[in-house]
Image (cartoon, rainbow, N blue to C red):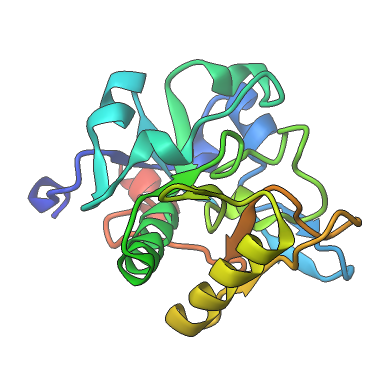
Length: 205
């Protein structure tokens, strides 16, 4: 029963949202990744009613929701206000980062525009796992700024040793590389919570 859920955010079907949100989220549509493979965008999202809720909501013991949704003017206008919608897989990303934090033994800082980005965000090229809520760009770990190849590769190795199936962007300044952050992603995960609405639910109503 939905009433038994402890997680405070409402699950919504992206296909049932107003057109302005559907245009930005493109729920259930396909995007091509950099290799030309078709990837299906998430359909189900958590509704975030306000910045205050995002600021206070713990996704894991050391990560709050706001850290995953910091964006600037490169995000589409409708998602620089509230309510906002984030893919349900964001909770899985938080758990993975919590495990990574345990491995490094200190604070892990997610960059602005480095968590969830909508497909309409100006940094969303090809099928970026950021649009699935399954990628994070880390710019600082403890007192270490990830602004050189040595530090990026050091923590990239920790991530690969700690997190099964994680992909890390190689260090460098060429296209497809990262020169000022550690990019971690877990692919194109689509999460459908147990109490997610479906077409049959809509028909009953």
